[in-house]
Length: 193
Image 1 (spheres, rainbow, N blue to C red):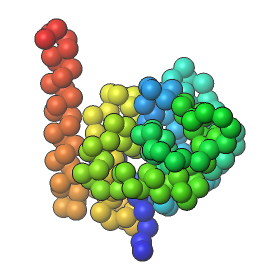
Image 2: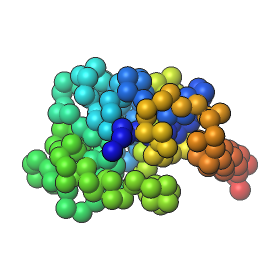
Image 3: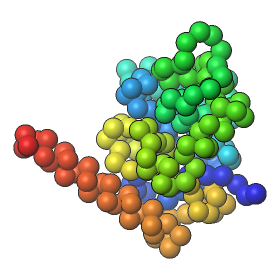
């Protein structure tokens, strides 16, 4: 078994994937409070591993990593997509990003596994209501403005992948198509059609 990583959901830099030590953002859907998590990527999708991350909610308020237990990307994905059987602290299914981070036990293996089951392969990811959108730290858009999604990294984060690498050709095609569709939809909205 190798390392574990994802591709970026945008192409504002030549880098296509996330590798250990990269600063990146996890865009949060508005439905869960919006904003983003800014973190340093650690293998296997652990979030807040280095304790230097921050969740910035839609209002711009910063919540430091030390306010939350360690988290996991697949556990977060499972909560966003309403997986059944999730284990959490307290009463009521966590509904906001803050609740998911505080009470969701996203790093617990059973919760993490729920996310793996629904979002490991490209066809699964394409069918999710709320797929992961992992982007460069310099990305300024919201979850809803980001046309792309993050797919499993074919090089498992072992190398600093670039969009020009043939291993990312199919994912780049999907990303370009998503960007084109998004622009067309935005154009249609502005013309009122």
